[in-house]
Each structure stands twice: as C-alpha cells, then as structure tokens.
Length: 414
Image (cartoon, rainbow, N blue to C red; front, side):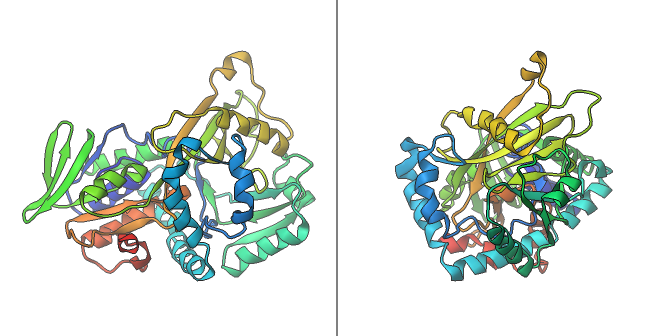
C-alpha cells in the first residue's frame, strides 16, 4: 500500500486483517500529510458535490480576495484552468444528482465502520458522537430553511435550531448566531494524527510492516507488481495506490489520466489553558465564513479555506492566522493566549486531493488486474477512510462490494 495517510492506513489494516502480508510505504512518517492536522470532522452530512452552480457568481469575488475562503494563485492559474473547466461541467444537474448519490452511498456507513474498527483496536476514546453544527450569522431564514429542507429531503439527520436553541446546545457561541443546522449523526475525533498512528499500530500488531521510502514508479508483469523507490525496488503480488494528491505522476506512468488538484487547506490549533472547561462539545462550522472549529485534546482547532496553488508552493500561513479573526465572530471568547502559549499555536497546511466531480477513485485499475486505486477523497478523506479500506479489501479478494463502486472507477476520466 503506497501512502500512509488515513486512507492508506485503513486499506493496509483491512488487507492485513484479511490474511495478506502488507507493507505500507510512504516518503514521510505515518499520518504526516492531510491526515495530521485536519478538522477532525467525520462529515457524513457533506453529501453534496463541491461543484455547485451558485459558485459561478461567487467565484470571481472569492478568488480576488487573497485571504478569502477561496484563493487561486496567479502562478497556478493556467495549470488549474482544465481542472476548473471539468469542475464547472459537473455543476450540471444530471451529473450533480448522480455524484450526490455516490457520495451518499459512501457516507452512509462511514462512521459505523470506524466504530467497529476503533472498538477492535481499543481506541474508542478517539471518536466522539456528538453531532456538529452549521451556524448562520446573516443568512436570511428562508435560505436557511431551504438548506435544511435540502438536507432533510436527502435523508440527512438534521434539525433546524433558532438562536436560543443553538446557544442552549453550545453556550460559548456568540449572540450574533441567528440559526443553526444540527447534524445529529456526525462525529469528530479529538486527535486525527493520534487516530492514524493508533490504527497503524493496530495493523502492525497484526503483522503489517511500514517502510519509509519514496515511490517513483510502478509496473505490472505476469509475476506481480514492481514498485521502484529511492531505496531500491519491491516486488509484490498486489499494490494499492493511496497517496492522495501525489498520485498523479504514479498513475501517469501506468497511462492513466488523473485530473487531481492539490486543494490546500489550513488549520490553526489554539492551546486551551489547563483547568478550563472545553469551549465547545462538537464541531461548529460557519456557513458565511466557510471554516470550522473543532474541540480537540487540549486545543481548539480552526480549519478551512481553499487555496489552489499546486503541490509545491510555499504555505501562506496568513491564511491560517485569519481563521482566528473569523473565530472571534463565532465564539464569545477565544482561549486566553498567554505569551508562552502563543508560541505553541500550530499553523498547518495540507493538500487535499480533489477531483472535479468530488468523488474519490476507488477501483481495480482497468488495465492492471493487480493494481488498485484508493485516492482523491477531497474534504472527506478522514470521513471515508474506513469504508474505503473495506471496499479495497472486497475488490482485492474479488468479493461483491457492499456498495456499487462503478461511480468511483478511474475510467470516468480515461
């Protein structure tokens, strides 16, 4: 399995549990990419593709603000045009409805698969089933109600709350919050990195091995799959590619086209002083400001924003710092930041692997029967990790998959 993020770890754990001898390979350490400092939100309510027609009118304004919720680097603009053209094409109602159904199918059992895994690994404390809130400051009630009905009609467990009901649920929220949508069946983790590490340790206890090496090429022959790395080659019976935004070149070497964008997201972790009550009991997302606040172990994590600048551009940590400014509008007070604690604030950037239709690639390679793909989960990598591992296990063992995986095949781009 190539890629030691939450997707690769889940694939490795599932395959090891099925009796395979699994080697997990990554150029970095376990969980050090997007899996490290994300929002920690198991966002099963997010069933709608990102390609939404209302964005057409908002995009120019959003893209022109360098510290707004969406940013497109001038240097990356030309490279991103083909991806955006496909993204806009997926706004068509027929495609959007089809993609929504596929995301719903993945999300339906996403949390229950995690609960089973975490119970087996004795790490149930790393998941909290308290739901999440989407809060509104200025949005008109009719628009909030329309959004509520939209989710409800798609079978998402949601309640529409007024200000008093919202503040009763989360007293730390600011009085300028007028309404909220309470997604009751959603979960979060107190530490995404600890979750990745714990699941990898569970896989190791079953016999999985981890090797830190950079993979440069994959090829298949009659005898198996050869994986070339910076430390020599590995010969294996099967290979799963699960290295997110870094998958494009590997798949290109196999003659597959992968229109993937490194959709960079930022987070800022604010340490919560000892002996203080938690600020929140569940994730709270802002509808207007497009970011999320998640209570974690000894920190309050602010996460969000979208930046299109490619894989290798330097991080713009002003985009992380601006999250704190936005949080001041959502919470009555932020954690008191003493001088030494300010230095402990952790700003982070990760590259979400986003495809223009908001669907991941989960499939057996069409022209390589020993190679499998598990990548491109955009904002839902953490959410869909366990179900993706289960599906890859079923594909490798040639069993019937528990959901229809045809929408996720890479053939849609080739």
